Structures are given as C-alpha cells and as structure tokens.
Length: 147
Length: 138
Image (cartoon, rainbow over all chains, first blue to last red):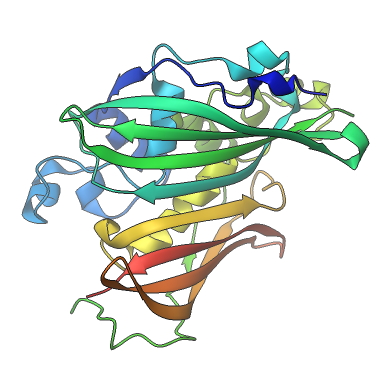
C-alpha cells in the first residue's frame, strides 16, 4: 500500500538544458531517419532555429534533469519492480536544442488494483522554457509489481 | 504536398512504420540516450532477480517509434496531444510495427483536427501499445 499522503505533492522546479549531442544520441538510439532531428542544416532548412526535440523527448528531460526527484525512493519502491502503464503528452510550443526547460512534477494519484498486487503512481509534469513559455506537459502512470 | 483536413477521411490508414529488431545494443543505446537507466532493460542478471525471464524493451522506445509514425505523416508541430497505454511487455529481438488510422474529424480551439487510433504490435503478433493522437490539419 502506497502512502497516499503523497497525492498532490509537487516537486521543486528542476531546470535541464536540451543538449544538442543528447538529441543526436536519441536520434541514433531510435533509428531516426528524418534528418531534421540530427542534422542542423536540415533542421534550419525546414524552418527550425536549432535541432527540435522529438515528441517523446519531453519525458526524457525528466530523466536527464540533474536534480531528479526520487519519488520511488520516497515511496520505498525498488526500481526492479516497476513497469510503465501509460504515458500522455500535450504540446504548446516546440522545444529546441539550447533551450533550458524547467519541469515541475506533481503526484496526481496513487491507487492499487488486484487486492494490492499492483500499485499505480500517476504523475503530471509541466514544462516551461527559458522565456517563461509553457511548452507542454506529460502524464505518466507507473505500475508497481508487488508479487 | 502537405496533408489538408479536407483531403483526409475517417478510415484513412497511415503508412505503417516498422522498427528493426530490438537488439540488446539498441536497449543499451536507448538507456543512455533517454536517461532511463533502469537496469531491467539492459542487465539480464538484474531482470532475472526481479522475476523477468530476460531484459525487455523500454515502453518509451516503442512510443518513440509511434512518434516517428506520426512525424512521417505530419510535421511534429501539428501534434496537439497524444498518449498510449502499455498493454504488454516488448521482448528483446522483437520488431515493433506501428499503425494508425483516422477515427474522427472535428473542430476544437478554433482549428480543424483529426483523431487517430494508434497501435504497436510486435512481429510476433503481440499487441504492446494502444493509444490515440490528436493532430491539427489546415
């Protein structure tokens, strides 16, 4: 049983730079063939000021942020027991290499199923760029295997 | 020619997008590139210790392939919101086959949009991701 008092708790804002090299590495790891995601000349020719972060990279920024909040540690969950349940994204503005994105994560729900055999952690992360513009949000559901 | 709202119909199917077989090397690269360092995806000793038969692919790797399905259809800036449920684990060596189809045309927030149903299946016939995406079309 997860400590439900964590519902509604919000992380301190975490700033993370969108690094050009990391975007190129992500493109390589995902076998990206669209050059705008790893070739700055192609990105600029397509009207982008720099390499754009691809659609799921917003979530990666949460993992790459140096001062990552450890919700699993706070809830006493071993990382070997988690699975990914759901992931949702909403976009308001593009994210580019060189941006500094500030993330704020809130625990929106904690619940269990199958008589406590599975616990669910739902977190919503909002992202703002260095100009103060909201660039998007992502919502994640993590499943914890208790058996 | 860019896709337009009027040229798209409910029932239209996106060009299927399939990954290469996901090797252990792919998983190591994705671990580093994504910042998801959970050892269960790259260390088979660790995976076995937690009751899994072997390492398995990050769900977000398959979601990245689904993102490619979308960005091959429209420029990324036209994606308004989207999401998936991870309905089964993707085993190592699987190819991920991404499909999508238009299920609704509508207007919201002063623009024309379509809703896509999107899915990922392995080449072994396992349904792994199910979701939807809302795309703006001029």
